[in-house]
Image 1 (cartoon, one colour):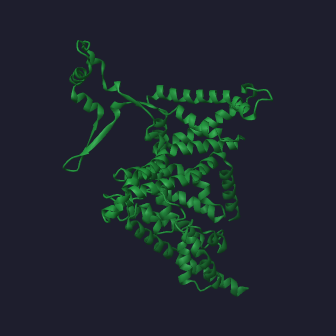
Image 2 (cartoon, rainbow, N blue to C red; image 1 turned 180 degrees about the vertical axis):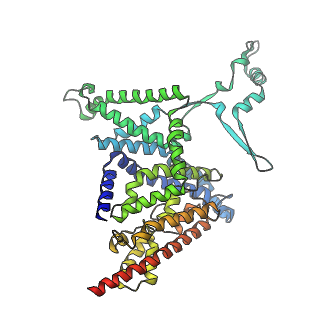
Image 3 (cartoon, rainbow, N blue to C red; image 1 turned 60 degrees about the vertical axis):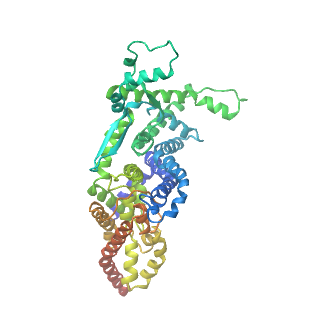
Length: 486
């Protein structure tokens, strides 16, 4: 047991000291208030003040607040739909800080580097819309289809007749010079700023800031200013050449990818990295169960397992959550069963190891005053998903009897949550909620105000309690024997 704990301790130390994993973990944690704020916007426009899918359908007076909906729609877009921008800047700042940089400039540079590989000019022909047929089927049509069906020559002749002065006329064949690609627009699509661009932001921020750091440490690339120049101005000139060279290198990588593959860097990373990881881990109950076993093994030796794997878990599961949020906001069926909040709602409620089930088991079945005291102290924190009093007070750390359900109870409840969701009993999770929100209310909000989400979490709470009961009774028999021997 000591050798096992020592091995996990070394692995945990490596995770904790790795600057890239730490940067990713810290960036997501620091951006969490923004994403929860965005979830409030979604709740307002889709669950509360909405006459089609929300409370407004049952209680029409609340629709008087509909005039405020643009505020909450903008709140959702500026946070959840722009997560890539925020996380990219935060990771760049974290990497720069680990490299010895100070100030806010690295965050700005991270945004610049991301923009270097993000398309900003588009042709209008790719725009499309859809309608629903009488039979409930969806028909999509692109602007290119509409453009070609109208007849360019007829449309141009009509416009010329209305605008040209007397005696003027179009040149012969003028209509042939206009195609759908003649129309364009500039901006940043939500495909790049939202969850689908997240891995591109992570990679660009990490690689870009390491390139910048290499240039930054080269004294030959620093523009030295006289001592009388203000420090702020001197530093700006000092990082000028490293900034320009880094932007050129990152931009060149983006151009090479575009020329070699015919697709921008974001599409390449999404198709080769983010999408496969989402399918292999985020869409796989076996892989997720194995991940939670690893998390709980860390906890068994006193290491915060969730923190250890956060840098791996969150970049994979968060995009799946925001895909569901986007679909829910658009009135479409959420595509993903698993996502970050779904796993929290079924495998992390009450704290790691779903130990609120153990608290209930002790309060109902325990005959030992010491255990009941610890459970009583742990009840209120457990209702807010904080369980350190149980983990280290009972303790669960290095407890060979209770560690068995401690490891496997969250896996069992996750599997049950998966079954309830794919069967349609539990609605899919579509919103991020604060991890401290009490169970039952947690899943009610996370599923968009659906009562079956709350009932589903009640079911796994009951299951967790049942899982812990036989091991609790065995543990107390061992405690009683030890007490008698003393």
